Amino acid sequence: MYSPGRNDECYTPAYAVRALVPHLPRGLTYWCPFDREDSRFVVELDRAGLDVVYSHLDYGHDYFEYEPPEWDVMVSNPPYTNKAGVFRRALSLGKPFALLMTLTWLNDRAPKTLFRERQLQLLMFEERVLYAGQEAKITFSSAYFCCDLLSRQIVMDSLVPYGYPNKKNFLP
Image: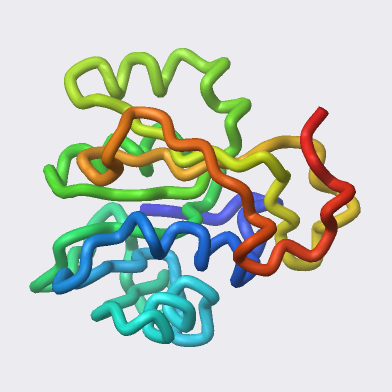
């Protein structure tokens, strides 16, 4: 059972979701497992004409126990509490995914162990994602940790064309 940590409610801005959309194949159903109907993921994917299903703990859908009947690709910003468990579950489902995560997690043992059998793909950005309500506190870079989704193992992009608000917040 998932129980939220103190810093798990960092909301993804629309531009960070829009930056993912060009990498998502059409004609598939996207599951947003940590999202309510007003989530930027749900709103922006729907706005892009993609089929979206969503679930959230608030609706009684525990990510570690619930799976919608039909979906093809998982996309979201998971809670950072129990990152290894979140990715273990994503990998165990055997479907493509893109989960927004701090790049500092690559310093841990867990991603190296978890992705030993399945290739980790990264969609990285020149800028830091400024999570809603946390903009002044963001000291780390984020990337989409993907599996079986991107055309290359590492894809570099910029958030600026998707509406990034602070062009001065480029990484050093």
